[in-house]
Image 1: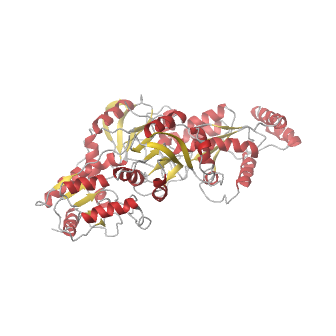
Image 2: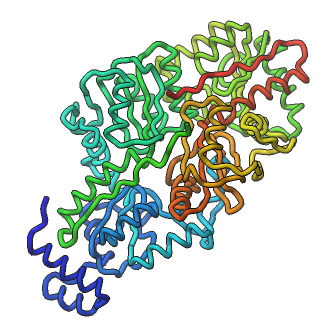
Image 3: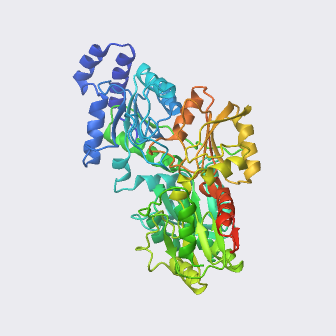
Length: 309
Length: 259
């Protein structure tokens, strides 16, 4: 949806004043219209629109001064430094990220006891050079980073699935609106994989298990992490599951065993972040209806992986 | 000798007090009192591995990971699952017995999964290396060249890397399976099996993307869970034959599942 002329004018006023460093003037001018929109104000409106209980982690402010006046909003699957650089260049100083900013669920909080097999203790050293550089970048550019994961994924419209289907060009093939099954034009598994790679602009992250020559028609989209129980329940009604990620020693070998048993199905993992990027694009579209004063823009985090030759 | 007697011998020779509360290191299927004709060690006890072990006359299978596609081998949601029934039927019909050794293998010195995988990628580890291997230094190379070498030595198809391929690297930090270690200031490259991509205890992927964006020489190489530990099951077979002399013991490898 396009913004109205009025909201565009308001944006120009607020943004222009903020860039000039004249915050009191911006406040005065904006008050005459709607008042300056701080990051805190924008988030409060988003929280009200999405509903639910916001007191628990992981969703919440992760970095930056929440009283900053918002000039624009960026949404992304993961607020990497590259994404933040693009947001700053685009003048989007409030960044909504689906995944953590500071390298783990604790999002930079002090290290806590962690178990074996989970990469060691949680949290990061505040003096780590990468952590410090990212904080400095956020502060020097007046950015505010807010994690929006659980509440966006839980939205009943299932935008994560819709977004991924839209990016794949499969929206019109959806079997039922309240489910994530798609009956796509029949093609071999390897051709379908080639199509997915091209549509999502993938590099090296996609991995496939199963018969590459099998005909694929019914596909289940599962952005994010797929548990074994979900897979046991759904795999046999599909020709292919396209998931973000699975635990290899669980789901992958279920797919391998199904293949050995002679069933022609395929499990594709495209990567957790890649699977969530399109849903965060829909989040930017949705924000235009909720926070109308400022532009909202999606910045894809992209496929992190490459393959050696 | 019965499977139970074999397990008792393993417990006696592991060099540590046995933790009977491990939910992983237990009998998973079959009759523990069945006579053992031969032992197959393997990474994942897939249907394919079961068929190969059975064809080779090896009725006891010792995998490193689970049998029923979840870490705890909880089968309460699987009782009506046709694949579960197929696997159970095959095990029972062929009088096979499955016992997993995971936690105790990782607590052994050396941890065979670490020692063997490092050897496979050309790094000589300490003879008593544990699950948390130290940083090992190799002659300086680029991340891209090192990753190509790892791919060639392991034959992996679906190797995934993060970081600048031109970054100069020499300090390697390895972790097996899901015990991929976290990047530290002392390491250039983290090599692991698998790791939740984001939202874990420490997300190597995002950290290395940001480090690369800052021009720092950091990289991640993900081998895949099975590939990162499977050579250790070959070492395991050799270790078993030291104290189980009269029964055929064989490592049954499996193909990388990915294309």
